[in-house]
Amino acid sequence: MTTPSNAAARPRRLRNPLQPLVVIVRVTYYVALVVFLIAAINLLFARGHSFGWHRGTACLTVPDQLMPPQIHTMEWTSVTTNVHESRVCVQYANNHQAFASTLANGLGLPFFLVAFGLTSRLLTIAAKGGVYRTEVVSRVQFLGWTLLAGETAVAALRTVGSVHLYNDLVPEHFNGTFWAPFWHVNWTVLLIAVALITLARILREGVGMREDLDGTI
Image (cartoon, rainbow, N blue to C red; front, top):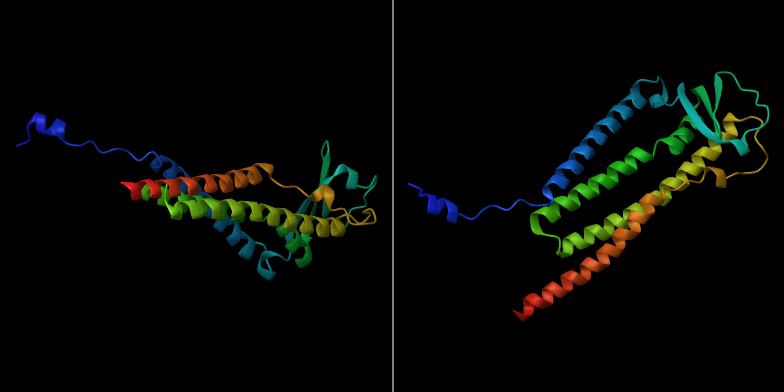
């Protein structure tokens, strides 16, 4: 029989402060993964030939400075004008246009999945064994470099796809190659990447100090 004094003396189990964050990141990751799979299935099977590229819709947002004063749209092409930009779409894109549209518009979600997958794994390891571990430091550093290199690569591929799609969808486009108006990077992602790399260096020093302290005890 358990007495009240024995129940009071029983050690209270502490809640891991990282566990709620692990759950939130993991749920977000799986939701985004389901959305990506649905979009991929739609791309592969719902649009027709050539794994969904042929007869698909390709769209591009064009800055005002790159839009000619008068544009004569091709067949099956529509133009929607906003305040500072125009959106040009072709309803029945060929494979080249569809591939360029994928580069221009379709790389954000896969990159998001990779980043959240790495973050989920990092938080799971940290929640189980603690933050000041060599494995955690390595994963924080790897996540930072992945974000930095990945965002740069996504921005470069997005720019390449946008330029090629612009040359196809705007017949009266200006002579020359205009990379700068289509070059966009997410500065928030880059700042997070630099912060993670810096945090990894700080944690590495902390791990070294902890190992030195454990060695003196």
